[in-house]
Length: 321
Image (cartoon, rainbow, N blue to C red; front, side):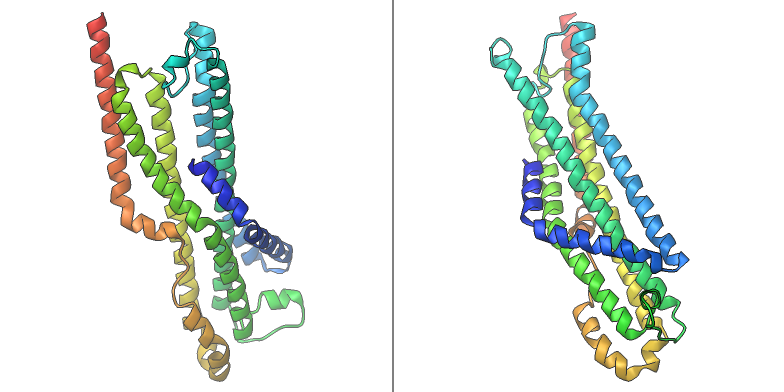
């Protein structure tokens, strides 16, 4: 359900996504005019986002194999009867509609995995790009030598006079505003429903403990771990963007041109200070600070329930033998 909700949000903010990607494309076209240090910053953040994307895709691929491939291997190798992964379809095992239900479940799971991977990867790449632009702006301010050069595109992009800094900061804030508008509701929805999933799974699992196969708890546990990993990736990115925003603020107020050009600073910088006094944050930055203990408690609770399932299963097997 939360996968489909995120897809609808993506469709609802289609125009904002288009503007955001257009801004990213423009930044990369202008990257050739940046100096070597700023090019390295963009490259490093891009590589970091690619690593996170690979890590995320690897986890979901493993989950997909666990959900779709292992049951088929058990059928072919062990000649076990066909069962759905979430075994609440006992009444369908002898029904003509069982095969259709199995196919539909497989298609839905595959679609959900691909949709979630696409959305999460999009979030990782765009947030990393925003972080890189903040680093570049901070580097420009720190390296400013008092000269104002606007003769060509290369000099303008590497300039740190008040006018250029304010203009570039406004561009970054517009990009970040689109990023926050597009993803904040999706992030909150994802985290809330992920925790709701844990509660629902525990409630359903406690009623069906005697019917669960050995594969079912493994599938649920792997999906639970993926949801937790997603939460902590969000937390990492949220804290990273907030810190880079604070670094820009520190560089901005420590730079000598802020004092030497008082009249221009008052004209250009005052609106920037008033409207952007709060550092950039996404929902997860606040969510992490408030709910770290809740995440930990959910992990321990889920693990204790799985341990209970295993104990019940072992005792039942011992009685049967």
